[in-house]
Amino acid sequence: MLNHQQLSYWERKTFLKDIDYIVIGAGIVGFSCAYHLKEKFPSAKVVVLERGYLPTGASSKNAGFACFGSPTELWDDLSHISEDEVWSTVEKRYKGLEYLRKLIGDNNLRFEQNGSWDLITDQNSLTYQETLALLPKLNRSLKEITGIDTTYSEDREVSSRFGFKNIPTSFYNKLEAQIDTSYLNKHFYLKALQSGVEVLFDHEVLEISEKNGKRVVSSNHGEINCRGVFITTNGLAKSLTKDIDVKPARAQVLITKPIEGLKIKGTFHYDMGYYYFRNIDNRILLGGGRNLDFEGETTDQFALTEPILNKLNELLTTTILPSQHVEIEHQWAGIMGVGQNKRPIIKELQPGVICGVRMGGMGVAIGSLVGKEMVELM
Ligand SMILES: Cc1cc2nc3c(=O)[nH]c(=O)nc-3n(C[C@H](O)[C@H](O)[C@H](O)COP(=O)(O)OP(=O)(O)OC[C@H]3O[C@@H](n4cnc5c(N)ncnc54)[C@H](O)[C@@H]3O)c2cc1C
Image (tube, rainbow, N blue to C red):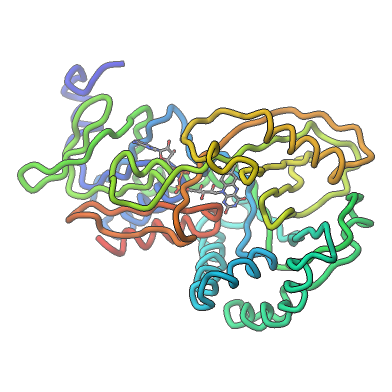
């Protein structure tokens, strides 16, 4: 590929000159940030630089759960995180989803509010007993955010309704929903383009520096000057800024071939959310298993591993679809950004350089708001 020096006067003038703001990373946060920059500064030239020939982050590899918190997850969080922090995180997710829906539109997201179920395998477990006792309080606290009564309830019929095995009961969340991730990405991309944002693919940013009061962004193809830089590279952010608490966390996913007469409809969390599955296009999408090898899965490599895929297959055939013939069509891995706590990092790292990273497993919910908040810092 030609480097920037080898381009024509015209090419340089069209794509590389007079750039005001560079956004690094073409994920939900990057597109949201770029779109909001154009909204705030309509005459500014805003360019997104993406290292892949397509966007290659978690935004185009996720499970499409529009979720904000399941009971066993909240029970676990409340045991070691302050109540204020737990509920402000839930609020951010809930409001983030509302904002995403407003920004992109339910039809453009293929948003379906089918509810979610937190599946319980052992009714004698402390997790189940304590979460059940906590439900009224969870509902009261959530109502302060949503204004809606009784979001969570116990559902003992989940297995008879969907055909699961060894799932005696569950906690139902009537407000959670699902989207089609391909729709989300396509429409966010279009929205950014329509607002006047430009996107350059195959540009891996290697360094951000400063020269004569300007930011200099060095990529694999050359240097570009601009006024401000926005880092939205999520789990890979450490390559551009060392002093930040974010590390990559791989997640592996499989999808089945279409299944005739599939009854399962909704989003499902299993084993406190370490596994998750949903219906999509008459198929089951199933992911998780990072807890089998936390150390090995702390990586930015897109590889798949046998122990985790075996576990996903076992769960699929013994618990989710125990009496059905099912074939796997495809498998993939994606990289999340995680850290010591579940909040995203949105801050100015140095004058004119702002980051919005560490979306954890909730970027669908919070990503569009994070992009907006980054622009408010400029
Ligand atoms: C398998 C899986 C399932 C998930 N399921 C859900 C779910 O159901 N619901 C939910 O809310 N969240 C889910 N998540 C998390 C969610 O997808 C992420 O939190 C969210 O997409 C993060 O968005 P982002 O824009 O911050 O980062 P990303 O989408 O990761 O985008 C970062 C972009 O930066 C690019 N990049 C990186 N380094 C550079 C560089 N040096 N130069 C240029 N470009 C660079 C990458 O290629 C990438 O395109 C899931 C994640 C995974 C992996």
